[in-house]
Image (cartoon, rainbow, N blue to C red; front, side, top):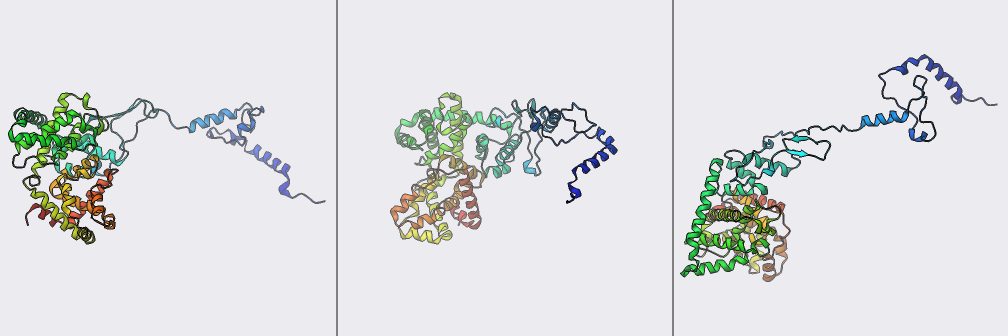
Amino acid sequence: MLKKPPWMDVKGEEDKFAEFNSKTDDAWLDDSNTDLEFSVDPSETAGTGLSKLNLHPSLPRDYDIEKHNQRKAEAARPHLLPRRLPSPPYPQEDNIYSPPQPAPSSSALSSSAAGSLTSEGDPLTRHTTVTQPLLFNKEDKHRAKFASLLQTECPDLDRLRKMTWFGCPRQHRPVVWQMLSGYLPPNEARREETLNRKRQEYWRFVAQYFKTRTEGDFASLYHQIHIDIPRTNPAVPLFQHAKVQEAFERVLYIWAYRNPGSGYVQGINDLVTPFYVVFLAQYIVGDVETADISQLTDETLANTEADTYWCLSKLLDNLHDNYTFAQPGIQMKVHDLRRLISRMDGELDTHLEKNVVEYLQFSFRWMNNLLMREMPLRCTIRLWDTYLSEPNGFSHFHLYVCAKFLTKWAKLIKSLPDFQAIMLFLQSLPTTKWTDDDIAELVSEAFQLKCLFPKAVTAVAGTT
């Protein structure tokens, strides 16, 4: 008969454990060992009358395993008492955030960009006020930088330009554009007085000059403006509103009346729209292009109209040669665009010449309307953020933007077989779905081009 091996002698092992247990019985009574582990799953003993087990002689016989495991599970749950959220670190100086103070009534600063955050539903933040908002992404930090800079008594315009070059948040765009246009003084103490004075001055011009629109030669001027207004970006519902069209008529007529050397030229009507939309946006929640302005007060509309007039005047002061007789400024820009393209992409220039496509036939509108008819209005507004920040942005930097805009489609254009196909494409470019990212890429490439061919600006300026 075979003898069982020692490792199968289970009874012997139990006797050994009983002997060891009797010698170390005091160890089980240590109060510090509060994290007892049980080898029996309570779910396996549910309904069997075995939920209370005597696992060791030192434990009470009525020890409840279920209650022990319940207490252990509760101890492992997250702390539910309200506690203050930690503030994010700001390792770089540019990321330092100062909570904005309430803005003056004359400025377009939005108080919604700053202030405290409160939570009533989240148990982690209930009854807790966070005085410094958490900035979760790049856009939040970008807005915070603008709010921090614009709350100062006299913002640094150089720094403001550097920030705006990459795009300005919507809530800060009205005051930023007014400052960078040279209309609104950066000194906070002077802003309200300047706005009131300039707005009143504009309405004095209206009262004095607008009544002449039916007299002599002014009648033909007004007629041209009157028929151009409905054609101004007809796809935007806002511009079909009667009050908006009347405002545009006054702005353009007063400007033309006071600038007889230039006068009104078809295309200037498009340049009104970005200013009007940006300044109106501070009074509207949601999409401005489809907004119903009937709920806005007459004072709000009057102020928007006056601000638009003065900023348009500042813009056109820098584009004077574009709108004088024969428009020599535009003629020069078209010539320099061709010269620049011939150096950037000789094959594209040769292909256009081979198919008898003159640059004047498609780029005249680009220069006259600042690409406004080639892309959605939202993209134009983002583009103007950079133009207002760049030295001579509308007059010089625009040339580089047009050059990169054309070469962006170079491969497709070179594949088109004839004049008709090329012109149809250039007159209806596929930009309807463009976003701010597309404009950011365009201006970045244009800036690189400016660094490569700086003498093109000199040619446009007429100094060589």
